[in-house]
Amino acid sequence: MKIEAWLFLLLGIFFIPVATVYGFMVNWSEHVGFLAIYLVAGLCLMIGVYVHFTGNRVGPRPEDRLDAEVHEGSGEQGHFSPWSWWPLVLGLAAATSFLGVAVGWWIFLIGAGLAVIALVGWVYEYSRGDHAH
Image (cartoon, rainbow, N blue to C red; front, top):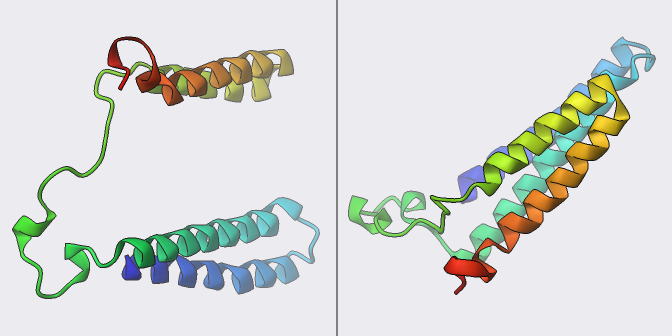
């Protein structure tokens, strides 16, 4: 994960002077633009630091080594819920929330409540019912 970490860290460092130059170019009067670029820099730095620490913890993957064979990357890649309906409910909750920002805040509150229900259902999906482990 060394390449991914450096990519995100360098992008985060790159966006800081870009946001500063943009702020000077608009005379710091257009607040959304330079703040958004600063936020992009912060998000890139957060992802880069997370990937760096995770890469140090788990060690080199087959795709990080030059002497790796193709078969070393085979096998289970993670745990996925193929029959879960909760991602669809969470997507509908996000769509309802975005609609609420555009139309009315009362719709946003409905979407936020639905999002809480969907997140709790998705997190505890394998802790209860038929699929409990």
